[in-house]
Image (cartoon, rainbow, N blue to C red; front, side, top):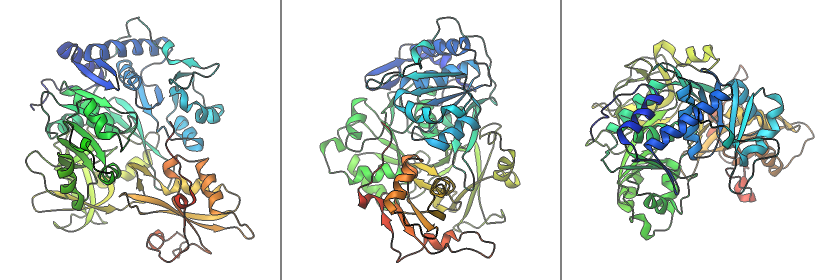
Length: 528
């Protein structure tokens, strides 16, 4: 499919132009509810006017604590029309992590789902939000004293605002390795340039429908589904959450031609019993991250589609490398998109030879096509951009034709079920237990691909908590995906001469008496 006729550099002009060019053509679909391009523009205008009437001004932060729903998009685009910066929050957050992100981004207002009011209410006392709106769910009403989201909208014209390509559109939180999460400030140009170029490699046609069950609080669903569709005049369709047993039926129901998948989703789908719905759909392209070389062709054959593997990060583009049209290489994450330059380097940032493992570093070829900074953390921004290159913390190799191959993670970030999590955050939660003297958390291989979380714990003298007690303690304080799957008690943590934990030794440890949480029947799931 040809590139978009108009290159947009901010979200408000994208939405307004879409209404002009595509009118009543379906733009976004959530279950049975569909909004046309015109309706998306008009409804987001009402939201922008409502935010202005509530006193929000350009540059202020609006936090969104929402599941996938039409209101998420209306708030995102309405805020953009006003110059308000949105801060999407992971719906699994609770306790200190939720409080920290709301405080760290300096949010002036919050919109949350009524099903998430309980974790919010536990931390609300320490926050300085001026306004809070609640979106009622069918099975969960707006709590007493809370303002229903329906009261936000206004029929007045939104105040005029002209955004620049370098203006902040959102703050997306990513896991820190040795400290709290960092808020990556995303400019409009980064959103739109990335999604435009992803579309050029996505095998799109005039009747393509892009379907995702990934959450809108992540850049994947924002860039690869929503903004690709809207830039090309297509339809984006969403599930509230991923269901392996219903995925292909749901994709068929919305007539999807393209889906976005992560490695854990790929493995779970392939392990499902074979059924007619495996091929009774229109999906012909799966945009994937993490497909193993061994599963690649069998997955394509079973589900009747082409796998297009890619690589990306919040900071440098949800898709930074991607297999080009007509040039897919088995096992490769592809070649750099046009907006980015990439290299493979050693620990001293010297370029290594083709076929040699090194760290992937990237930098933009055009202004404002990567994140602007880590919000309020200039020292971490400078560290990430060492020698004027952004350091991804991932090991890759490159072949002589410029194709890249993911090898492993270099930095201490654990990738579990599509979420990046920092050992630091899990360790901080465990350390709050009075029986824990010290602990170290590492990632270990998972049967579903990516990693599971394992905690090594040294107890205080005389303390004797059970592993089950510590698992429950973590579940009360952490998002479900951060709760350790395994726990092992140690007499002492192996350390270097300067008393740093030797994580590499713990990752490779064997023969220990670890406890598997799931074997105890303790399964923690996403909030519903």
